[in-house]
Length: 252
Image (cartoon, rainbow, N blue to C red):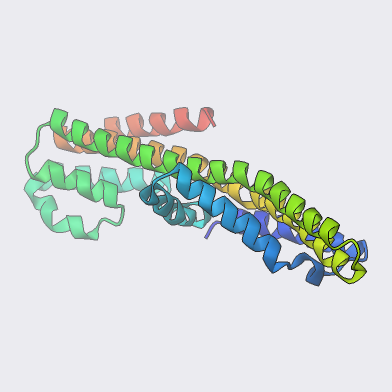
């Protein structure tokens, strides 16, 4: 669990609700079914029109990536790669076959399977790099789904506000209905702007940041897999991977 992501969401929403209460407002006033239907339903419809259902489903699944803590630390992965390399140099690559099931990182496990299957280094590199490219494209689309939804929501919130004001004008002769129309008008704007800036746009940004981390991790693993395949000296591979990690940290 990424504590920062949850705290960010709670603090953002809590600050708005808390500020509303301090000003004398009530949370009950912020709950308007009609406004929610207009804003969230309209935003979902516009998003589905802009992207394929597969892209939208991938975006929903990517929410877990945004809130999930990083599963594998680069330093731990490097140590695991070096341990595999040492064993391969002592006992041969075929001896690693029984160890594959114990490897938790799925990308490392897949790369090691390619090595055991006897694929050439160029083929291993090509297959793994293609998987990285495919994964990167899918996650970028997922981020764009949330970024697009974050662009639609405020505009649809304004649309909801206009619809609410239309109802106010239609019932100007009935004061009892004016308050409800105004409430829908302003709450729709809050829903649109709030959901965009507190949830949708930050989710898109978070997914992109996590994507960069994951792509780096996979590039690191590819380098390690090729080192295992070639049987390079463990000290040399450790220095190479640590330099790779250091260069990445400098660029952050």
